[in-house]
Length: 627
Image 1 (cartoon, rainbow, N blue to C red):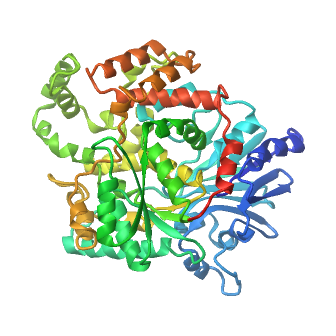
Image 2 (image 1 turned 120 degrees about the horizontal axis):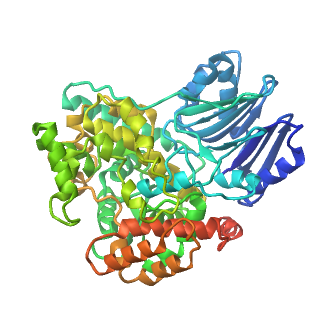
Image 3 (image 1 turned 60 degrees about the vertical axis):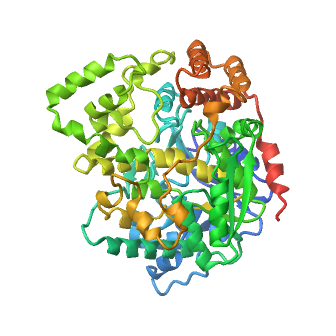
């Protein structure tokens, strides 16, 4: 579980020693079972760590011109070696050396060749130029900061904040957070620190500002052919990918298993490759909010071992500050906590887990993707009447039945859809954000994305928005960071560009139907996964915060609101009123309240300095007991 941090600077303007001292704090604070490495060149610095017992060649390589650092996993390294001149011999699938050799021939095209999750840095010392790239979907993070004198990059936002010396909140990013429940890229909540977009590389050279070039983006190219063709293609590609992602002779591999079809398909295919696969599940005692029973039933039918964890409300809330510390920025997705716990349990038994993230975005799995069908009736109403209906509905009392349906049906998709989660409208935020800016809108994030797919079917447009926002900002962020926080590597076979290329060719009507989502993936899974999973309605990852905020977590919530020092940014009276209304049962405001609470705890962790997790977390990982 490595980290890296580095910089490009002008020696005359920045003291070499000060820069290295600031940056190496991040590396020095990482897990103690790693070896730290530092590369100092004129104008260039890189610090990184490598797990003891792991070959450095897998992370770093240099020759007479290039320094290459690779953080991540590549699942097609052997195929990449075929592209290299036959006279050049590389022992083993060492990605940094492969990239260095390919870069001489293919230049930046090499980034698109890689299948896997990665962030990488190339220092061209002859031309004094840095290249950095992030994987296609954004599994691995890559942060940066640029000013007139210095350019800093890191796998963790903490590394850059240490260099800057303070964590200053970006009001614009905060305003977006309360729309999305996460900070959408390229923003972070820290002023001056940004994230490189997925499928993007940058070039930074002397006396030139940073340039960003998109080397890959999702496109849809539907082919209308027989359903059975797609069933066969999906089965073949998923079995191929599960095999590739399980290829590691020296590591113990297991699977996350929920009650859904995505993880069950991965487990079923993994069982064909490795008979004694272990699976891991998590749930709650609250009735209706646990998939453990279903996961255990699935494991029994597949004849695989299942290890389950039940989380109490007390355990849940106790881990929130540490989880936020691991994530760098606030993420108000309640499923972060169970994911942390299941990763923690899995880390006692295996080194790598396979998981089903990405299937919903690629194959049309979210229930909201059926909305265009349910709203189709509005297409037959003249635009002028639709506008009148919308104005009428907006003046109805909040909880009048049908109000939301009319507003959604009369509002164009590009004006209402910002991804799978939407917390607050801009007009709502005026009531509680002290730095609210009427010139800032979530449409600044989604508008350009909609423009790219304006001629696609509405479901494809929704998929595209989710792939470019929700997927990298929430789903992949929590999966990668919270598994890494527990010293375990997560691999996601659906998050493969070749799987996407197949999914992008499948027509919308085979993904989402009147009766179900992920239709063609379910058909491809028939006979592979148990029947009780095949047509189960998607629930997401249910977490009972709606109930807990009224009872078990009510005292904790009130304490966080009272003690957090966020008055500069948030109107606390608004939050307290929201909580009171929720507790009276007049409406379900649990997700909106949760968005406030997570920001408040983030503020306590990073601004107020109420917690310190570095040393504690290092000791936990180093003292792991394997079962």
